[in-house]
Length: 220
Image (cartoon, rainbow, N blue to C red):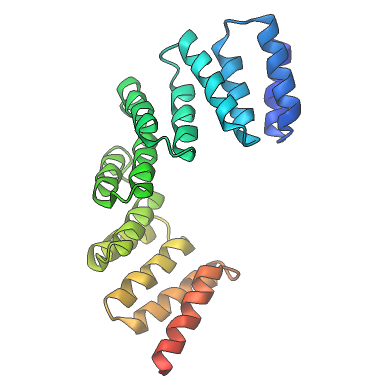
């Protein structure tokens, strides 16, 4: 079992998902009660876009090991992709019940809330994630982007400045900062922020398009 399953993992890492699926199925034939084989088979199936089959294998893994956090988390992600939002939230809540420090579960929950237009609830989940992981530039950046989408530019700017303080080479945060500054009618500073984003990532299309749009609006 271990050799076949290990070969399946290598195939999956190489993105040879059809080979991985065959190998995980062979591993299951050897040991039908190993939850890892079902979970990794499900991961490979999901990578191939076979989400319904993936769910069945996550279900099998979790039936064997009800506390299998990775399988529950990944099932939740697939359920969210299938717009089974209630079931996805139940999975992510279960992950937090089993592993309270797993802050990424809050992000998965926030993504469900964003997909369903519940942005205030999404903000709350980001706050919970930051309470566990307070030095994550990505969390502050994403929180700033959500606030921008809500038209709350002043608090967005504070979050984005925090992201940049943690990671001064974060092009996406500079781009989002430009959006917040435009919302606050601080166009000159927004242009500087776009330039910083482009300086860090010269082919960054969002920043390039944002800069052109801002230049056009300033000329009119």
